[in-house]
Length: 427
Image (tube, rainbow, N blue to C red):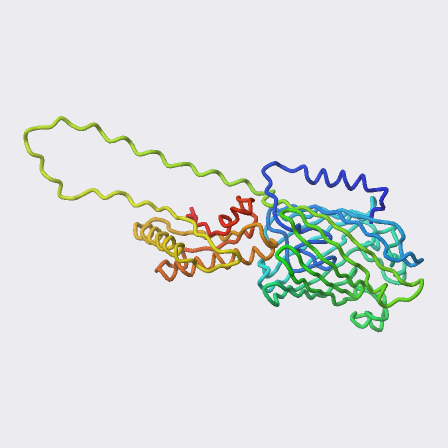
């Protein structure tokens, strides 16, 4: 971790990370290396990854709760940049000290929506120095690395983790990991594979935690590994995130006297979405139809009536529908819009034209982006099933969720316009 005298460097790092193209779109609670992340609880990973094209930055600071010889009695801090070049994969660079820069990587095997089961694997703390852990190489935040002197040199941590939705507002996360997830205290050693052979290089331990949203933007979080127990509150405010956490709780709960320790941590974070994606080209309006020819000079001879009557060309316009707050139920007025959309799709297919449609689910900025990704999916699926019920072939319909990452209306009085499904022809 970086001590307070290094804070100017953190400011420079944050400014460099923020210096991104003006077209970048900010999004919800940041998904970054440390706290208040959709990819982490506090320090334990979840099965979530950043959305493709997103970049997030964060910095956090930790303060001692006890002034004892077993604690570091000064503030420390670290900084991180996390990004996702493609779907289901993200990377991070974290600075614990000026000499300890490490890399992370995570791949999502299953999942993608917070309201569904997820599975991911990854590696943390891949660095050039030995004994890299969340406390850094040369610092002594409660349990310095040299306390593990009998362990073979450890250059990375690895894990596999599942995320399981329990209710609409709560999820559990359970995983197995090595390295930073392995501890050997008297209370946790029985959760390791090294019960009888301590400090083995490839020991594996259990970790996990839970998050419960008590408000749309506020969650209570608790996590534990065989090395640490942490709990606290995290919140999101548009693209910004903030967290207050009590970390290393075991030092105050189980230890006595001069052996007690614990830390209070604060975190701030910011996330950009669609940073690596090209902005969509604006739709080019169709050319205006040519003006009708001038009326011809009347003639005396009667003109025969044409045998056929010209029919106006069919317009294949698709209109959006909207939803009530936190709902995915089709309203009566929007059902009429879906009926018109179904007629356009069926008419285009009957004309022998490509009639594939993408249904996009969108949400307003309320609640976390993780929750809104699931809500956007439910809205898109509800629209799809309604169109199928009107006779549209399901093979022509593809659903996609944007959560609240594409909410053009930021005024609370206009949030109802963000809660929508858009229908776009797939060309």
